[in-house]
Structures are given as structure tokens and as C-alpha cells.
Length: 301
Image (cartoon, rainbow, N blue to C red; front, side, top):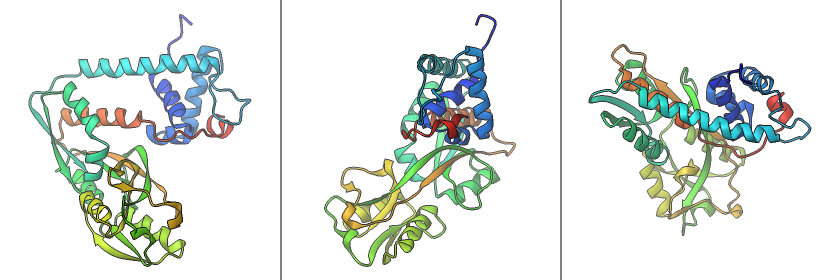
């Protein structure tokens, strides 16, 4: 193999396929088609001269060669990201406006932004916390440089960087989930969390009423914590004092939501914003979100 070389994007496609258990999810994360991801994995197999996945099994399972290659691929990707971070031009006291709903600011971004701060101590991030729709509008007008939002109906552009499971949340000592009608703490109209909750309850024939409307996660948390209502948030927002309602509450299943990363195209946007965008793209995209193993033939062949 001395005369061959390994493509970084192909290795990233392979690692994402293994970590998410699905070519479909890997393609969403990388913004490429499923066939492109499959071709990249097949190209790696041709270069290595051995199959990476065991196509005799019904589940996605690595061969011995695939297991060895996965370890090396992760090391290579990590070293490449570290190299690019160290060699990237240092920006002097430049400010970036990062738009994000307070839910993601509190429960998803802290470790990533802490790492970014260590790598780029002279770049100052100004957080703009708002709901997803106004944030997308601000990115397009240029008042926000980078935004991490929830995909909503009608959104165009943006890069899918992850998925989050929606769950019902109730207070640790609350019995609101057994009430009829079910008291709900919801985001304002037009938000997909609210839409999915109402659609699920209506399909299940469950009576419900609005007990609280808040555009911040703290308001929804408070309503659930004190037993006023049941709310719908992502799994990451399950904090002490809250719990998922028991099966006896007969609440319907909820879907997952896509996370989109936007970068302003307005001329004033800086190279520092490019750095933050790429940093978020890399770290969010490499975070495993689905441990379920998928059917190999539908995923990789």
C-alpha cells in the first residue's frame, strides 16, 4: 500500500457510518448523497484490499480489517483536525455573533465552545439566544454570523449536523401527566416542538390544554418542575427534578428533530466566523447520535 493514499473525506464518511450505524445518517451529516457515501467506503475497501463490513451479516458489523481501520481512521481524523486548528491563522480580538436557541446553548454547546475558547482564545463569541425562525432570518440579513437551529418547515439551506430525540418531561413528583385534559407547557406557535407534541396527542386522541407558553427553556422547565404541566424537549434537557412520564401515562411516541448549522453569506462576515462554523461542523458531526445498528445491505450496498 506504499503507493496508495487515503482520502480524508472517505475516512470521515466511514467513521460516521460506523458511529451512527447508518449510511443515511452519515450522508445527512456530511451533506452528500447516500450513493456518494457508499462509493467512498467502497473506494477505501479497494485501496485496502479487504472488506470493511461483513456483508454476510444482517446487521452493520465490521470485519477484523474494518475494526483495525476504524481505530486508525479516528486517529488520523483527530490529528488532521488538531493540525488545522494549530496552523489556522490566529485572529486578533475578533468578535463573532453566534445565534442559538437557549435549549442548545445550555445543553449541547458548552463543551464545544469551551474547547473552541481554548484553541482560539483571542476570538470573542457573542451569544444571541432566540428561537430558530428569527435566528435564520438574522443569519440571512447578516446580524448573526453563525447559527445552530432546529429545522423547521420552510427552512432552506443550512447543514444538517445532528438529530435529537424529543421526549415528554414531567416533574419528579408531578402527576400532571395523568390529568385530563393533559396540561401542556409549550413553545410559541410556529415552533416544531410544539407542532410535534400537538400532532402526536391529537393522533392518539388525547385531550390536552395549554397551561404555559414560553419562548425559553427555563419557562418550560419551571412549569414541569412545579407540576403545572408536561412539556416536550430534547433528551439532553432531562435535568435533576424532571423525569419522563411512566408508561401508564400512555403518552404517544415523539419523533426526532434535525439540527441545522447556518453561516451568514453577508460580506461583513469574518474569517473568525469561518473558523467557528468549521469547528462546530466538525465537532457536532462527529458526535454519535444513534447507537442502533442498521441493516448492512440497505446501508452500505
